[in-house]
Amino acid sequence: MLTAFDDTAHRYRGRVYSFARYLLSNREEAEDVTQEVLLRLWRHQDGVEEERLGAWLLRVTRNACYDLLRRRRSDATQPGMAASLDDEVARELTSAEPDPQAQAEAADFRRRLLGALDDLGEPYKSIIILREVQGLTHREIGEALGIPEVTVRVHLHRGRKKLREQLREANP
Amino acid sequence: MNRMEDDLTCDDVLDFVEPYVDGDLEPAEAARLRVHLESCRACAAELALARRIQAELRALPQLDCPPEIVERVRREGAQGAQILPFRSPVRRGTGLPFRGARLGAAAALLALALGGGALFLRSQQQPKQPSAAEVARATQQARYALAYLGRVSRQASLDVRDDVLARRVVLPAAQSVSHSIGISLGEAPEKPVPARGDRAQ
Amino acid sequence: MRKLILPLALFLAASAGQAQPPSPGFVPLDELNLFPRDQLSVEVNLAGGMLHLIAAAAKDDPDFSGVVAGLQSINVQVFPLKGIKAESIKPKIDHAVHWLEGRGWKANVRVRDQGQETFIYMKELGGKIVGLTVLTFKPGEEAAVINIAGRIDPAQLGRLGHTFDLPQLEKVPVKPKKP
Image 1: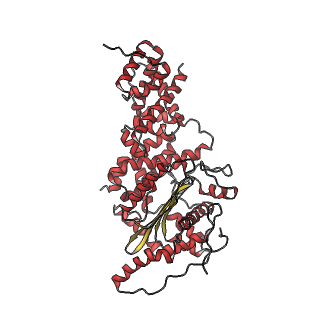
Image 2: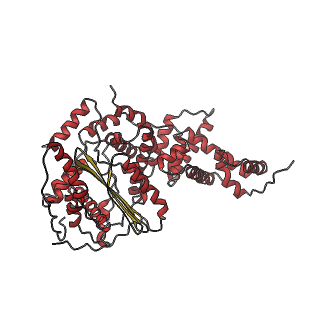
Image 3: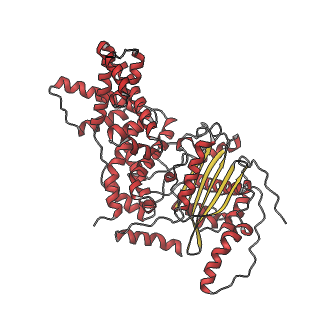
């Protein structure tokens, strides 16, 4: 029989892991963060209101990723992390493109997009992942990150503009 | 009928592309942008790129992690798992880890010892005991927290000690307990221990 | 001994499929969302097993060891306010105050003095103090939140706070202790 914790953890583990995976690009680190976040859920679930649980989990996840990124900043850049994320994404997706050349072009665009996303700074990266990849509303993102909804929209636009500038340069 | 004048430059349009894709532009602005796009292939290409980026981002899948992570958390949470430092190496002596920290040279060691805040479980191994260095670092953090508490109290011109808190908290709490079990309190609060010199580490 | 039994009890309760109660004196600082974490000048997060290890390692300092042994968590966030407007932080402090008061925390100290504000809250359970939360805010300098959960003796904590003299923190001279 599932406990309340089991139910909550299974319901949210994908969202937490996916957020961390796209933020960090590194699978092992994302699993560590997911484990840390779920352990905090275990400890403090009674202290968090049900309707704010999702926002709380995302905030804790982002903060845990921040700690990692802050430590990682002083280390040498780990090559290939975005590439491994692209491999994992590619395995999940089935191409809708009709011919091999179009498929190759689509895969190349996606790889460059993930690379540009990996290079994007905060808060743009978090907001783009939460809005475009995870489908949260502007209001939900604002609650999760503790910022006004209008700020979410502004950051979202600026972040996507930065992605466009980077991808445009690769395709003059 | 009034005709909207296209007074948007390409630079303007490039700033408006993302809000336009999201439907966040005022109708009048959106109309001017569309007029510009009808005659500017470069900006039209930018709009197409912006739309493609959004579509590709939205097509990215939700990735899932192994379900055994939940089981591991239940097991380790129940056993009171210790939180261990993340496996990434932490550089020593390369400056303060916190942006904006302005501690002196003597406190740089404290700042390094405070590290990066949250610690992480090892995902693929059973948790092992923290090293002596990790415990020493955590000890400094605990002493810092208690010292900060003392400083805050002093700056508020208050002492978090018997003769102030006893009146507000300790005695009332004790009295409520004593009332229920019929024991009267008549003792004076214990005098504080005299301050020490340098703390041992 | 209570400390030895507690981990076993947790294990047994988990095996029976029951969720573990969090420490009632614990305040999830992430939930308060007071300060941007990537701009903190100091952050401390200590809990459970690590605190036991600290207490065991500090046996040469029985006051400190005794206090820490009874604690379940220590969490601190310090946020520098130089160049930051007080108006942007004050509402967050007020929100934290309301959060605490809405969950049964009692204010023992509320001091406002020349723009500086200090709040000391305590959580009582069964006649004992199980949580201490301090909010402090000095415009132009720094704001901080401290949460300590567990078995708390304010008198002991206060004595310890006086004995720790970190020069880099002491901007105000310590008042001489009365004989």
